[in-house]
Length: 409
Image (cartoon, rainbow, N blue to C red; front, top):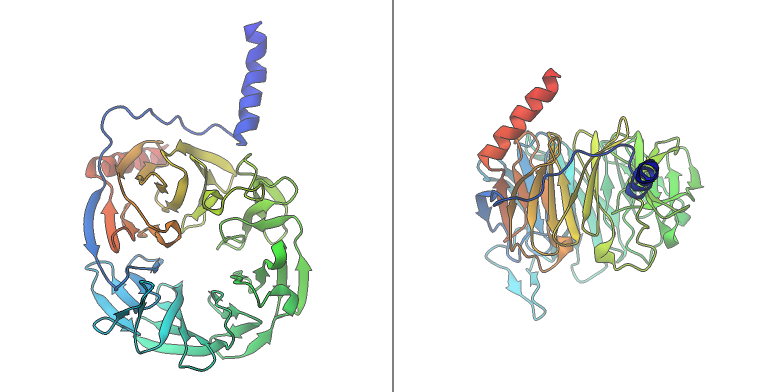
């Protein structure tokens, strides 16, 4: 009788896991877990770091604070290359604990367009209407290549930028030429903080009133994607060949092909955030910079998937509910949970490579977690301003051996 139940139990287990194949077995935590090595820690701005991004080649990073400015830095020695709207030395603490300065400028957003081009969004208020501008700059040579006013109303939504355009409010702006293309108003809700998704093929995706709208300003077309809603703020991946979100058919994490929007498979059997869960327990998403893997975290579980072919590579559990995720292109997974554990896993072997305990963040949304590309597992965080960790040498050597073995096979 027990033998006859075995196939049924295996099938039931696979259905509940929602995966295409079994992930590698994760070893039980026996003995002490290696501590992540702290290699650098610094306070770059008064009031901490609210924004952080690393270049695709790992040579520089951008950091900023809403009230204290923005800066460009080298990763080799963390030295500043540029700083703008810097309030250091003249910052004042307001009654609510925030910081301000007489420049009357606030940083809203920042990021990289490519390894040599970066941008930041700045909100200026000189006593009149709020003006929001996007500044595009190059690193070599260090110069401003474009600046544009993108908004003159109090809406503070974040701009979305790609190699050719800036999407903001009701316009698509060519940051090379300054030419502007109107966006149909149903794609935006001026009374909500909507962050548009600008796809690599220059389409804009927005989510007014819980709906997903795809608009092509260059061809003046618009359609509703009724089958999908965003997951952790992302829906189209940087490779422009895949999309990930929550399916409105069953409210499960789902992977689609893009732009065909054909369903490939589910990345979780857990029902999504629409069923009354608090926002801090919604699904978390991380993408590898090479676009080959993604990680999804929910409750105490994190799954790492290979995109092509679609396959579950690893499933791990965390001491507390998942708060933040990071995934490197050389096979490391970092998790930060609400019990204060920062952990790094070897995706290929399923082994826990290191951790830091008792890391706390007053606001989980302001905590940043990202791997430095090409560093072999160096991890940037905004724990105590900016703190950089690296994987213990023994674990990193095990990773190298595992990778070499895989390549030979």
